[in-house]
Image (cartoon, rainbow, N blue to C red; front, top):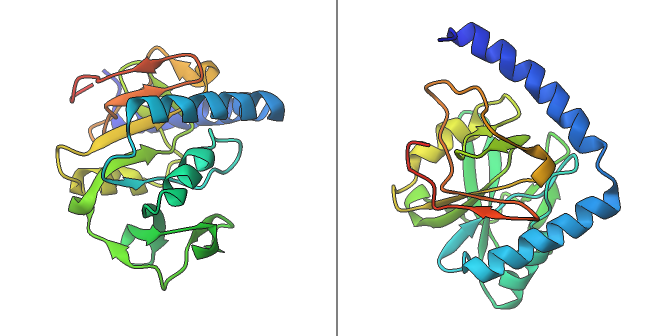
Length: 197
């Protein structure tokens, strides 16, 4: 059994390795994979209730084609913002015009967008470097989602999007890690997975 310090070290090594692997995926391949993932999100019906999504960075699976579909239906979509002293909060958006470039260079909802209480959120697309087949994620190391996800209702659907190439058998896990219920790649959908991974 690894100690917390060993798990953190192992995660850091894996994060560097898997980010490098993701950056080697050709842009055209990423775009095709993202389109396939978005089609699967439509098929699975995850647009019911309020969705919290993410604006893709560093070659992440791009959910924006699916999000634009929700906006075109007149639906609001929540996006995360990291606010000093508050951690990660969600704000409602209605279109790409609601976004500004944030402190980390990530597109995020403007401060004029209404905040969302965690219990209002039905589905969360959870960004990650990689996922494993149990639904555990390897994040970017900030811990923002690790603190945010437990504030949601237990009924909230947590959905991980990743490339098949970044879906691994087993990631190192510590007590703060929160598994998703669904993992969607361009080739398959795993879920619903056991709540405890």
